[in-house]
Picture 1 (tube, rainbow, N blue to C red):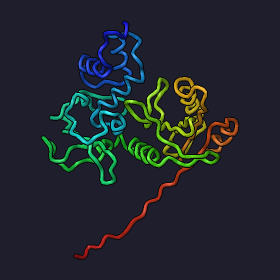
Picture 2: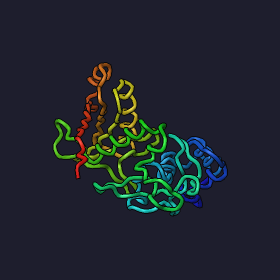
Picture 3: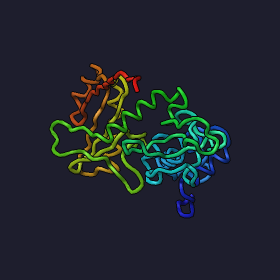
Picture 4: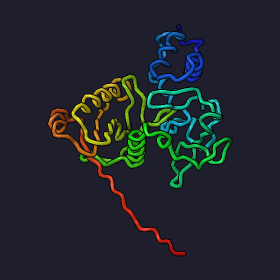
Length: 267
């Protein structure tokens, strides 16, 4: 089917989920859309519409329609994440009323709206707190969002990095045809692809980041350079050896620090 006359991708996603009913995986939604509208619908556009439309997906705040605090009761709020890569149609009477709220540090967070509708408990800070299945995903998301706000200074590079932005979204969990890039940044006209590993960085991360770098080179960078940065709590020896043969890829390790302070019970 020719793209002329097609509805917006967001509407295609809505139609597919409603026709399928029940819990749907991302691949199943995309297959349904292609059966209705042909193979020409862009894969990453479908992924973006699913993420941005899911009221409890922490990454939805990186899309322009979700960059202001609001209750999730608009045309942009129609899915609910039931697990990583799976959604159902959003029904506030079942899943509660969700919102995009501003945290004390000024950042946006996805949470249950406190004291709205049938919500009985206190506000839940993020979707991952709802289910243990999101535990690791929560930590990955927090690490990713922190680094996106505090892009590191890379040795040998002049100037600072800035988050890549398009008309409708920013470079956090940037969707491509070969998978989502954790963080996409720019500096001095060049592109920087960040791949984050919550624990140890395996050597397989090199193939993954090269795939993303290749996509960025073809579709965005043109004659500019593309660099890859793998960030992990511990870079494996195998990855260190592999990276010596790929000059455009850099390795970085992070450390987390937690300070505990006694709380005074006096008045």
